[in-house]
Image 1 (cartoon, rainbow, N blue to C red):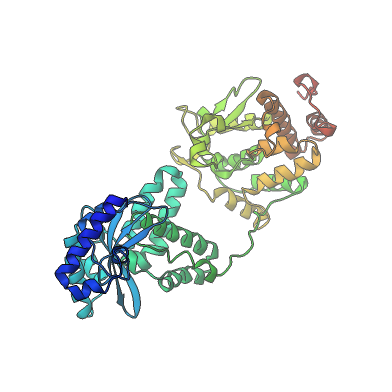
Image 2: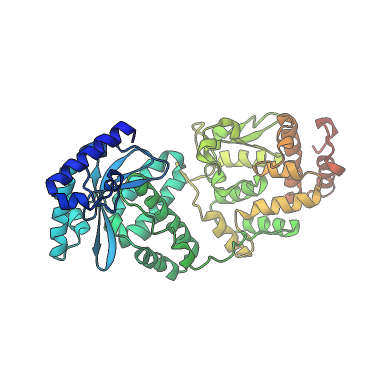
Length: 468
């Protein structure tokens, strides 16, 4: 407030105090005290209009609990503090200029009357205005606000957890009435069913909703923020079961061939093993992602949109994951197209039924269970199998193996290497891996020796042995 505005505000306050009586005027030492909370001086429209944002939010008090809240963003709103049930509570009346000072005072008088009758004014307001400030409504607004930053999978997961675990417990409650014990009780229900990690994630999401509500000036605190320390710590993360010996990996693939399941499921299982990608990539694989299938350098280009990446990275095609295809993978794809002929480039490679639906998420895992490898290996485990065996076979190719698994390189210098040379190295690795899975004997050993020379030395295509 500049000097001129301060003088105008002081004059206005003095005039109001004169109207109240000289005894009241004498109780204040200076105009500056008249602007303080202790003076309990009522707000004026001029003071409200003159209030400017500061680095930290602050309050200008009116009387009997009513005050103006000024956020760092410049947003101003009337709030009313009161006690109900032995606890101090806060009610946001409305923002300036949508709500005038006189309207805010009238609303405060109504709230005081409700308190005299023993009514919770927040509940009464919810009944009168609908669910505009119910937790579920605010949470859905937050979800819509964040939706563009998330992938479809993550957005669906967030909404499902809220609808399943949060809305039934606190969704209908006014967001300002939700306390720490209320949130803790809702999370304990999740813990009681053994879902400790889910409880942790749900608390984070509830806290994010309150953070959004604070920014929207609906509440002034986040009761979920301090609940974390009261939750049961989750168990240490367990790795996916995986076979780490090549003999066991071959045994699994051989056993799977003897199980009576749809042939396309067995093919998808072997293709997953040959490419070491995530299960979702194989389930969603389409023919238009395969390049140069009948040429000298066949590959599978998995679009960034289907990779496990941040939403922003999914929009950039340079983040597509390129998987060089071994001879075995190419032959497998030819068998797959004989089972489900490709009618359109966008057709799924491993479909079921009429060809429009991907194999089930649990189909390959169930195949391994029936083959006698339940608890020893899961579909995602092929990535660990691939990395473990190839790092032992090719100790100098750690970087290339990581890139083959679509891991982002930590070494920025390595990331700057010529992309075509990196692809050639990965092609040799995938062929060596396919030969190892086949148990190709001397041929596989020869390919591995060239693909993984001591120290990771570079070799050219002409150095590969003739394996025809």
